[in-house]
Length: 75
Image 1 (cartoon, rainbow, N blue to C red):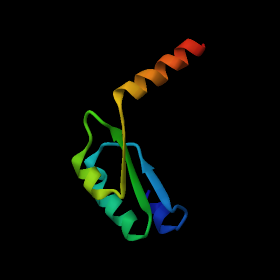
Image 2 (cartoon, one colour):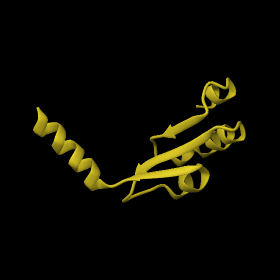
Image 3 (tube, rainbow, N blue to C red):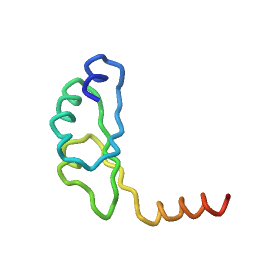
């Protein structure tokens, strides 16, 4: 993530992790004018990442269940 930002290969990053150890990397990426979206779960969002990233998208458990059901029913 940081390497891509340093090399100017990305403008936006979607972070699909709730690991708060990534906050220093997020801060570095943002300092290089890259926007970071935190993609997490609604029932247990990481508060540190919600404050550190530019945007937060939280997935509801019901959305995951609906998606899984549609996958299995279409098979």
